[in-house]
Length: 489
Image 1 (tube, one colour):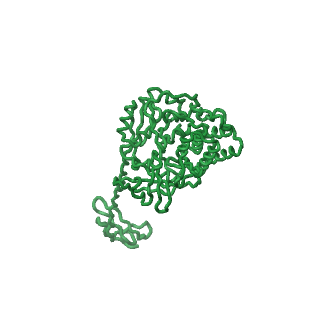
Image 2 (tube, helix red, strand yellow; image 1 turned 60 degrees about the vertical axis):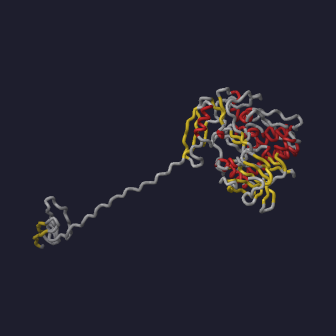
Image 3 (cartoon, helix red, strand yellow; image 1 turned 90 degrees about the vertical axis):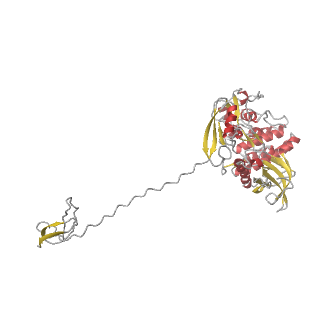
């Protein structure tokens, strides 16, 4: 869908393409119902049939709708409508506040270095947006210049909560899968650990470094090298003209140990306010606060250019971030950089294989010198025969076994068989009437009048009991009738 076509959702007229990202296109549009300009983000058509991307798109709508802050681009509407090209596809779209201005990434492309005061203003407003998100239990996970919008009025707004995480949301990534943009990825995310508010603080610190230095803190030939630098390396010092207190602000935000950074967006806002007010911050700990990662064998290494990376590179998903497939460094022996792993190592990204036919994935992995073990997973979330997970990921030696989980249709639950009916016991016919059989009374006493029916005898004759007072003997037939002679007492 584009300019000149019918209204999206019978309401929004797409007028000009503003940007294209990994998940969708952003259009300048007109709301024909409320007569106002808006921004419309449309999920790319190739992803409309992918449940994961659709779920992330819906999650962006849910997360953004739950946040109300001056520095967060507001969400106006969300919809899913059939495409008008007759393909039967569904179009998912978000309608957001239109920010008249430009992304910080465009500003830095034009002005690589920003003045200190302007940098602090951008950092404080962005941190204020993150503070609102963190207070609501939402972690952005993809803070980068492309998601920071600088308005012509000077107001800074953060956008794109497509891969955000919240305690109330369903997981949208495989276990151990790293999601984010490599240049702004926190060490804990690169290590496959869960992102938290301090992860957003680290990314914002990297933005501040880039604004002040005129270059990114870490750069390399591919996303895997950059992610490893986030784990091991320390950025070069900021230029000499950057004030000491600003150096302390950026230095603490970029500590490798998340527990040593500013805890969340609110703490970062307070720190920037102290710097702008002239109150000196506490210097960052000596050694860069790398206690956590040094214990894992990931101590900072001297900066050097990597020689080469063997095997396929992790896919870079523009806008939606990268998926490094979980570089599983936590809890392992000291790990050498992938760049030095030698020709017997390949790098696997889970996102490169999830959603593809299992036969195709097995063939691709076989060409890389890996052995594949298939594991069927009963699920209705993925079409049968498509890969749902891949482990291990990251740096894997050739000859290793890779487990590939693929979807199979859930088996129908068997209907419980009815319990067998227990036949009722046949009714026992009451014995026939007994007449004339006298019951011997106890010695010296009168008969009680009680009636007993003895079981039939094998010879076909039965003794009969009768009512009467006195002593008597009698014979009875099988029916229980008898005659007796008795003398009443």
